[in-house]
Amino acid sequence: MPRRQITYSNHPNHRARAVHAQGERQFKTYDTSHIRPRKSKVPYAVGAIIAIVVLAIAAFAATSLLRGCSAEAEDIDGSQVAVAADVKVTIPDGSTASNTAKLLESSGVVPDADEFLAYAKGAGLDSRFKSGVYTFTAGMTLEQVAKTIVSGASSADTLTIPEGYTVAQIASAVEKSTSGSISADDFTKQAVASNYVSDYPFLSDAYDDSLEGFLFPKTYDLSGAKTADDVIRMMLDQYATEVASLDYSYPTSKGLSAYQVLVMASVIEKEAAPDANHPDERAQVSSVFYNRLAADMALQSDATMGYVTGGEVTPEDLQTESPYNTYLNKGLPAGPICNPSIESLKAACNPATTDYLYFFIVNEKGYSDHAFSKTLDEHNAAIAKYQEYTASKTS
Image 1 (cartoon, one colour):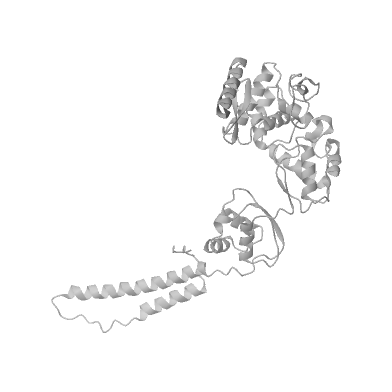
Image 2 (cartoon, one colour):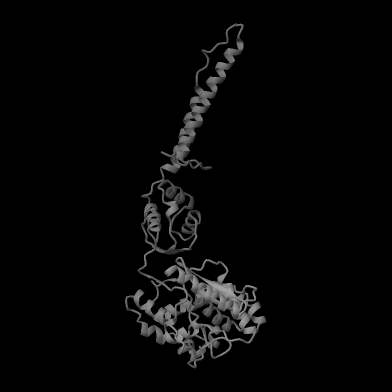
């Protein structure tokens, strides 16, 4: 059985101080008067005996003190009340146990971060903490707080919007998460840019009065949201926060506005494989679109027409006139085709440096990736090679 970790304190508790004092008294009052140095030819032997006795006593006192100090960590009472008042706390993704303990202390959930962390470690819970939004109620104990974080946040009051969702998909997700108290229809009717442009100036360029692209994908706490307006404002606030740190210098140098960057990011989001094996894939997809714009070529993205059809795109669809048809029309589509992730927004602001003008998606062994090419001949050859490869595997 592994030994438990001993936590040493610069401020021993009452029990530790008492044990220390007892050891010190035993050391000071130990009677060594009967040990008399005899006249002997081996006086050094007596000195050695005395030294051994003294060291033994010192070791006893030190051991007693350490036991007192270790008891301070081991005897932390998990049943002691920690939470003085109801409080809601969001534990960010990637938080360590130490960071979580400090956050709980600063939020008023626990009185002492070190004490809470010592209890969690002693109970074997510190490595199992989960991120999320938590509500801690008055009267909860250290044990209850720790076990709540281990269990994970309740999904009852949360809304998770995946990256790449459209406004219509978000509306359905809101209705489901609120058990119908905010209907998809109410959300869709409320989600128009003109309702919010006075508070969010970045909506001034929104195409067709739509909030498409601006409803940032994230997990939201809906416990305080009663209306569609409440939810929409949370998403717009999050969008403003996320894009505040973006560097628009590159797209600006290419003549793109912040809104056009959002449009570009939404196309990248839909064209990028979510489980791609290449870490810079979004930036490479972005480079293809920038290179095509620079060469005055049509983007030729099926995903932009998929936004119109709501699903698969046929050859006939690609011949249908639409402000989202990037086969018939050069340049970006009229507006965003989804609500992109921060990764796609970053890729739209900072594309890879390539000469690629073409790509197609490769699906292999449970993941998707892209094959990039510089010329149409290379592109067609890559497609033919991939089709030959897949045919050989099925034959």
